Length: 207
Image (tube, rainbow, N blue to C red):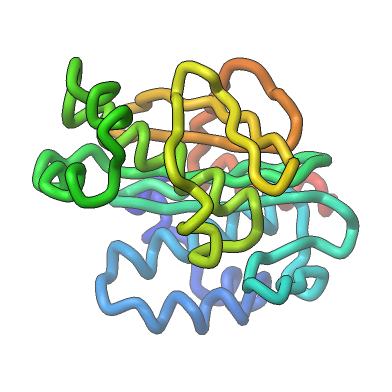
């Protein structure tokens, strides 16, 4: 969902649906980030059907739903993204920006640098998203960084403490997107949805 659409959402609707996320959004300095934080709230509430009152956080700060649905959100640039299902999962979306490439030698191993060499800017962001999605799926956040030594994108799998995380990744509208899960979900399918579709679908379910 794009921020140009999010701007048209009535604030009263959002404050009523997810007041805690609205407070979180207000802490962002950039308007773009505030809008995407609100967009992520819409996806959680209206698409995944998870009430804000039914969300709790783990000791590492990862949000979970009391109804047993696993979910994760990410936002970058002008898009917010959501993944949800019956198994532990994580998602990351990154806007392709060649100005980020200078970080490659600081965060990737020699083998990872060889993998991104054939298409440096694109593959840099794909690998970045893969790692972020695994970190988020694990639920450990920054605590996982020492364990996330080297990823082989072709294998589509990475194990942490005996748990295998399967990942899928692709480029979508100048953004890298990766999803990781404790089950193999196959190829990554992306559905683009507008704010109008989300809100209309919400009220249709209510009626």
